[in-house]
Length: 337
Image (cartoon, rainbow, N blue to C red; front, side, top):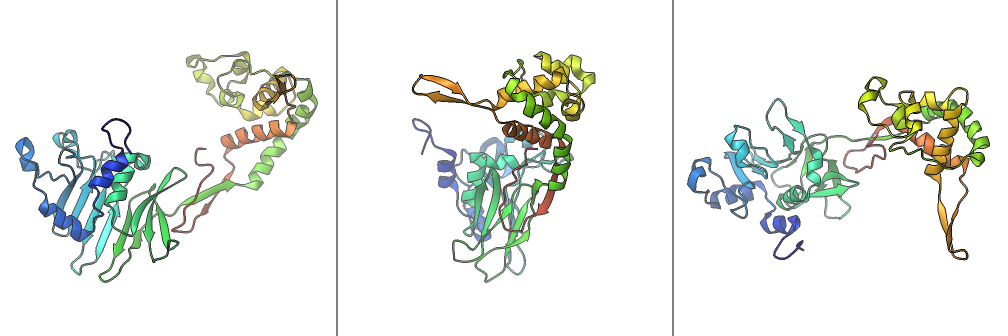
């Protein structure tokens, strides 16, 4: 499906150009392609699909190694950069086949080389990999993370998933085998809240919780014209205060105090303002068909404290890591912390 008149989506383009390469297929395809002529004739540029898409090409290293690239722009070649690889196909003297799926990089082969796994989420990249991998290998997206799926049996459930986030993934297939097996993969870790640490944090907030129980019914919701939460300002560097635009009185009062400076100690005027702010944040309204107006719903102290706990946890990061079984996809709910 295209996006407009006479246009094609990234999926359409790569589905048309993709060839599900194995080593034998890519070696044969390389020989079939007539190199581009003209000024760049000496560079032996062989686009594997449409010839105008010359950045998507096959490069031969030797008789036992080829690779696909999808960002071999002329700029990089002119300035001496190493052309980055997308998928490398190798075969040893016995005939065993090895395929490496490479993570996109900045400054490939340079001292400044840096992995950019998120780039695999771009449709033009994702589908380039997907339609050029051989049968039994596929790209898979799960909770905004990309995996290489590797079949190891005929059943739809006989598939393993290897993360494409920490480094290149390599699989191999021995002579006579039907399916690929993992050779170089990377283990993922799943983070969860450490209950011992969160219990200690909650204990420190117990005094504020008692204060909230009494003052919440008396407080009027008020956001104090803040662009960020009090905890955002509380963690800013006081020395850089003059360089940061601040809006609202409560922002000025919170600046540089840290979360303990806001929620622990003797209650004061700022403490009451915090109650007003969080009451505003947690406020909800419901349509009343009889009066044809919105009614304010009561705000529960438990809801307010749950909001504060979440903000403080994000600052303190009371987390523990547990290894995930290889071949299993996982979702890290705290990856943005």
